[in-house]
Image 1 (cartoon, rainbow, N blue to C red):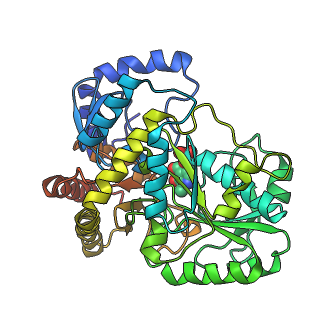
Image 2 (cartoon, protein in one colour):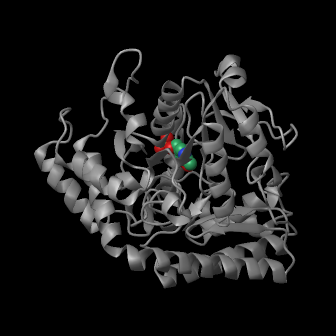
Length: 449
Ligand SMILES: Cc1ncc(COP(=O)(O)O)c(C=O)c1O
């Protein structure tokens, strides 16, 4: 039911429904057979089914075009269907796309990674960021002979059992307990194999020292998706030193930051080299990919065999279509990196600063966090230091905002981080900025902010 108390949101939903009859008709058909249509964090104000993507736009089945700020959850840094990637994939399609035995593209992508990523002496490919963090944790456990892995509060590392053990934000920040996200994860995994650390907090260093004899690995995102701070350099440098001192391996989860913060990723941007890194998203050019990169002595366990080695199977690992899309993407980024990354950061800063200034001027309790082209709205007063400070949030305003923005033709992932790409030109950035500001003003006029 639409509430009379929020007339602008109600009118936006009415317009959206009127424009999307084809999507509305598809919903019951989808619901009949699909247990889950899309990731649950991408809740849309109205059903929306997509027909195609091109550049910075996606078009729905009713022919409505949206300026896309989801960008494949950060995978599409060159936009939808960039010509270099299309050409590489077409060429590979003509040669076959599933050969089991490796081809040249896998070697090329590994070489591009090794050249750009400081820790990447060796590389192994998988099909998702989830698999990359899973294999990296297994490598670290096998290499050190220790079982526990530490993750930071507010972090996200995918959907395997270990990754879904996270900080319990109801417990003290300086020594947080762990909780599982959702059911089906054994209590033993939660209690015996993981450790939660407080993010951007020096208490984490004491916990690493205290647990040094059981800790195989500390995992951190150089920038967290939903709490994107850019000023993490000093913290990451100290974390590196503490892990060295404690004899614990350090891994950067670069699934989002890889080739986004800089060509190479967070370890290039901050000048801190971890022992291991997990990549995904951008390095597959928008196709399903994961990669573990790191020290040759650690990744050497993959080739070792037997109980001393680490088993790593995968029907589609290193498949030629993904490898050629990824190599074409990295080659395009490498050729343009000196202008592309500064331009992307400048566009992103201009957008965020305009929205933040508007919120401050009108005293709206909205925080737009941004670390270059990774940006995230929180509907509460800032500053926000860590994920546990992102709630309670003004959910009514948040939901209205996403509907009001969508009505203006901007596809913003609800309750999620959004990404800018090289395909977003200045006019598109201005349009999105204007839409954000108008939607916030509508929320205010509806009494939600
Ligand atoms: C930082 C981070 N690590 C790991 C993952 C998992 O990657 P995938 O969704 O490809 O399994 C994600 C996904 O968004 C991520 O943001």
